[in-house]
Figure 1 (cartoon, one colour):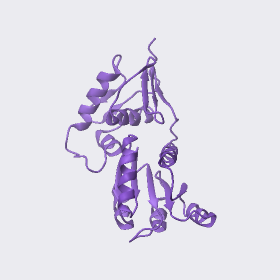
Figure 2: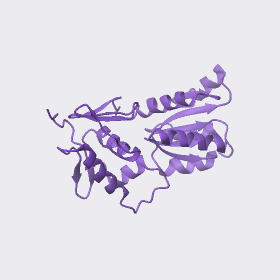
Figure 3: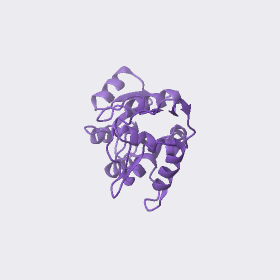
Length: 223
């Protein structure tokens, strides 16, 4: 899942980014509304965690700019009144969380919004005997738990969520890594290679030459 945090309290923004990265998400940070607008203009985010009170472009204006596509918005604010919540949702935000909040609640809300993609993604992904649970951060094959790195898990999650469609290396890099990733490295190819080894045989990740990778829909279970 690719997440953007737009929050002018730098210490809070950085702390949230570290926490969400530990949850396996690819996270970018913007410290004002103008920077946030620039980032959403060039990257497709699954979820934007958006402070309502921002310097530069306001959180309200940025929310209005974002809504209407596949990106989901959760607004943060120091005011938790019903009126503010109604106003935030009226702007098109998908969720609203007053400060202070418990970090596990933010994680749960971000994950819930991430599942509301188009098309909708089921909460647990399955391909044959491989089962991936995004909430629990677990992957099992033949009921054996596999130990995957965060990036391996992220790549497998994106491929399985694609429902058999081909996913390019560029899209994997955008969805699983953050903006600091070097687009000219072989990091995606190497990650797919190590992931295949951990998944074992029979392989479920196909290489589509010149296009990318896919996990075929309806892969038969191995007994």
